Amino acid sequence: MASNEQTNSVHHHSSLQKKIKLKQERRQHNVSFVMMILLTIVAFAAITSDAVSDKLAILFILVLAGVQVFFQLYVWMHLGHKGHEFPMWGIASGLMIAVITVGTLMGLIW
Image 1: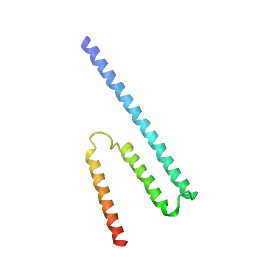
Image 2: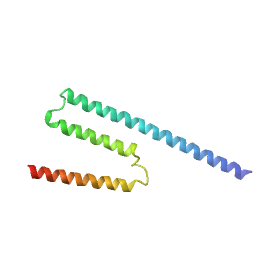
Image 3: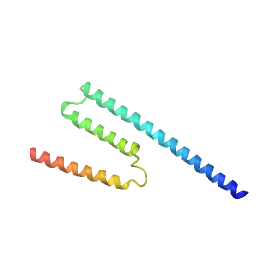
Image 4: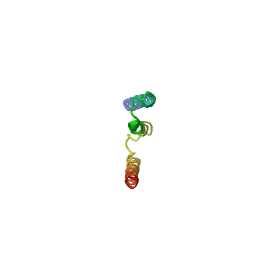
């Protein structure tokens, strides 16, 4: 009888932990979504109000876009969780190749 009660207690505890984890994950998604909307509004407002000079406008937008990409990958695509190391290496490799390519092209054009 005690074994059955222990099993039920463990199952209830596990279920409660899953619910808490799901609630935390949902909260992270909501915060991330709001942050992405705010970053988009900031970029739009900065460019339309001429708060950012024309020379810095593209860099400003790219930085804000980079932050949004981080939110997308880390929160929405769950790359911050265990077991996602291989996709992270692929992304890091792709970024490194992109930086080298853009740098090389800029060097050739300049």
